Image 1 (cartoon, helix red, strand yellow):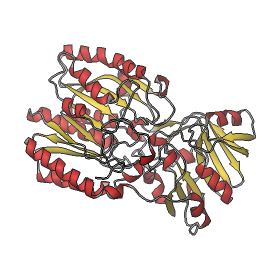
Image 2 (spheres, helix red, strand yellow; image 1 turned 30 degrees about the horizontal axis):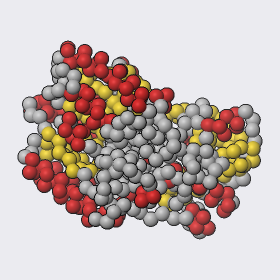
Image 3 (cartoon, helix red, strand yellow; image 1 turned 120 degrees about the vertical axis):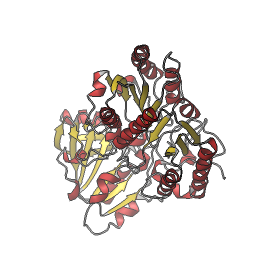
Image 4 (cartoon, helix red, strand yellow; image 1 turned 180 degrees about the vertical axis):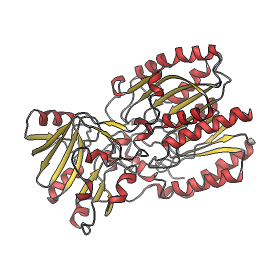
Length: 488
């Protein structure tokens, strides 16, 4: 019976926000709780399916997961390692056969800039684990490092953004591990990080450049059967680490020259397409002055306050534009625990948003009508939602209040929650298809939910920490030269 040690670490760290991500911000699953994620739509669930199909015994250690946010305090990783290490040592002593990791790939702590590489190095340092196959799955927005490539045998990343294939990628990672065990051949990883960094707005796989790079990667796989997997990694621009940005990696038994040639082809194509990673953004006031005919909601996509990129989710840019234009039948979601508490206490004049980023204009004071309150729990309507990748299908926004000011409905949340599933609004009594305008604090990942109901969509320019103009970010650690900070 093949035994597989399983661990998970999932956080996308924004290095330019003022907040710190603490242990209390993480969902922690230990031991059997990992196996209880079977059926929840996450990448862990995908691996469990692959293990069940292969007849493996999973040895579960721990999985730590948090929403994207600021730099993680140093104690979090050490707490995680205290959970994982004793299980890993016992498993090694008992004769575990392999290791599988469920990762994001862009976590940064106060002490470590390559957390995933450090995790793999520590696992390799445990007697009995050094020579075992180490496989896993990671997010398309990882920052892939030399240490990750050196310590792993077979890591695969998502191929879709929005991440509708997170669970499927967990299955695919498990399938590669099974191939390794059946064939008795250990693949190797190779990587190449071209000098390019793109903001999240430029990394949707339905559009160039990612669409073209994914197509080339799949063609390379067909041409070279010994390349088991070719990863196109968009990278995470808001991490101030040397390897932030675009990268490519291969898994396989092909000769080094074959893998290196494949990586060079991909890197050359990325350089050729580099300008396409910066899509146009609009002034929200201009958009609101000329709304298209009302055959569905108009979506104002606000990447500067992208919750899934680590922003606080309480920016007031779109709200202010809606107020100025006096738009009717509009809706925005603002993460503001203080405003929620005030609404629960009966307050009817609220200070809304503008508290989480120095870049925002500050709170908006509004007289509101309280529509409803709730505990903020909902289940995803779409189990392939981008949100399911790490969180599973059961979502908790914390206590929520729905308030209305003139024609604008505002959903106030306690825990920031990306707009990746229509169940977020419907669970609070808000029917998105009946709205004229919806503000979405996102970059790309909202599309899976919102594109089918949308009359028009505009990516708008507002103040916030997840700016698409990354030249404005005060990088200190990023490798140079790199586009667009430098000319190639």
